[in-house]
Image 1: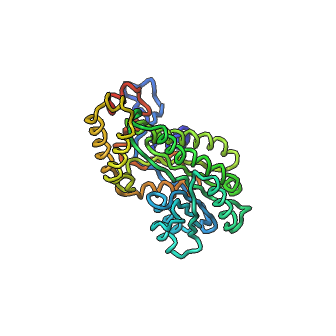
Image 2: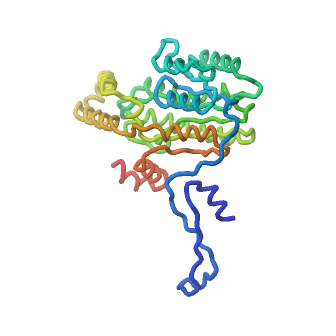
Length: 342
């Protein structure tokens, strides 16, 4: 019974038992079985759902990056994919590549998650194109998002609101619009968060705020949807900037110059250009790092959509970031701050 409970609580740990030697110093514990918990690095996958070919999923932010790769992968798995694309009406190259598959199971949809009108039109389009709308929509992957950087005093309120409008309120709006269809299918909601939704970082407050919000929203939704048979999962990627091309050197420079020129004079005077440039250089170094292989993220989303028992949270990230996240979320702040921040 204990091993069963431990396996449910910690699916990425293996549990063994050891009977203490009767002649040992622990003789009073004769016959007691002590659980030995060992980390085995990765979770094992549970059994998968059947009849994938009869299921449809909607993925947002499919113009490029994770969304584009996830859309192609889920299509290859046999799903009917509705790929929400911000730039479909502008003939973006990513959209053209998805449409070049010429498959009746790959349907691109014009979708700005911040626009109530476009979300409504997308919901109507998908409802019309489902094989059986009464059986609902199997999956929603809230992937669309934007990012920026800048210390609190360097970041305008407009920037805070813009990032939140896409990352947080866009996720909420999409989920509310498609939950009726998801509930009918007893399906899945998969929200793409970030390791920065679990641990904060200097100069990333606009992004962190929104991803912390996505984490809280996902937890609340998971509790509410449990009685309806809907599973809600969160995927928390590590540093994949190098793979997603989120920031080019030119974009970093453009953001920095705009930020500096829009700063109030008192902020520029108090901090100085030298301090500002040092922080931008640090951001450039970070943006040129990270994993270039997104397969772990794609694998996590696939498992969340296809496993009979999906995980609550997935952590596709390098071991350094996984360990850092564990320390920053489980140890006292005074210790984790000393190790990673100060």
